[in-house]
Length: 387
Picture 1 (cartoon, helix red, strand yellow):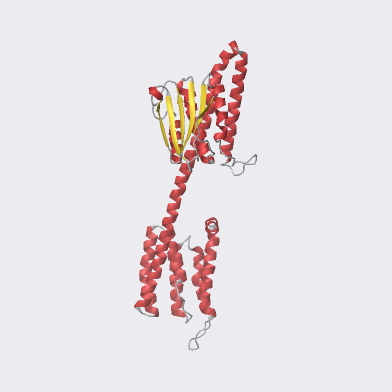
Picture 2 (picture 1 turned 90 degrees about the vertical axis):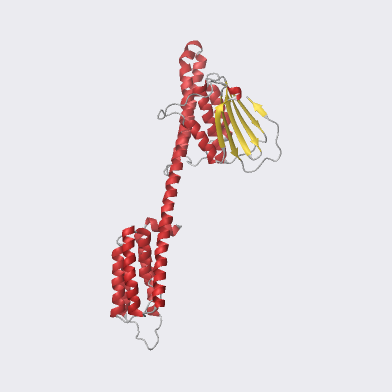
């Protein structure tokens, strides 16, 4: 992984390293003693071998030109000097792999046509045997195939990276929507009730303004924490602090009670309450937050109940109000309806389901979510309800 990252960040350094590695491999026949009946290796032959390797430094920028240069210097080596042979055509294999991995179809076709001419010619100049021809065609075809596989894997990684980026954008959009929609809804309710409270009950007006301030500070803290994850230069605090979880749920309910214009919020649990993984806890918090936001904004309800039921390998989350029930879906482009879509997306991200619709007996509105859990509790307990 480090080598791949280094090659991506410094491609020229990688090309130079490959050229030096190929040069080391091609040096081996020159340092190994030759049989007595053969002429000793000469420096001009070694220099021509080096000249064959040098073009690999530019293999990414001009692959076809490098292939032509390698073909020409290899032919010159074969015709002009009596140097030691190589067990493999290292330089040719490297450049064919590079063309197959990085070049467009037209250049790849040109490289294949050049190989179909140069490989039989080189075999004819050397041994003129079918064995050498078959072996040479095989190794060059293998280098080409490996190059194409590398290109396919790279493209697949790019597609996956784009999908991951899209998922992250959707996640951030859901977080922004949940935080801002909830905070703004509570602040609007308090702000609308404030002028009336100033005239008839100043102490209630003071509490309303305090609730607006507290809601705004909480929203700013959550936004700052979420956006801090996107900044590598975050200096004030730890941007990797966990998202809100079930431990913050009572505080959320208290803020809704205080800012909901007399809305009665009932909270209950059923089954054996147990700790949840941080991602699951954050999802449950956001689902309840969005459901309560919809109640405050649209339901005109007097009571809303939040119930968490630990049912074996599943957690059921139910938020039901006694308000006006389902409202007509607004026309597209009005900026509405994203909250319930986000609830479904959050549940689906954990392998769960979300259903929304009328409450019991067709009155009010209900959000019901079912999320799988890892292990069942040992012994279920009786339900516990608090206000």
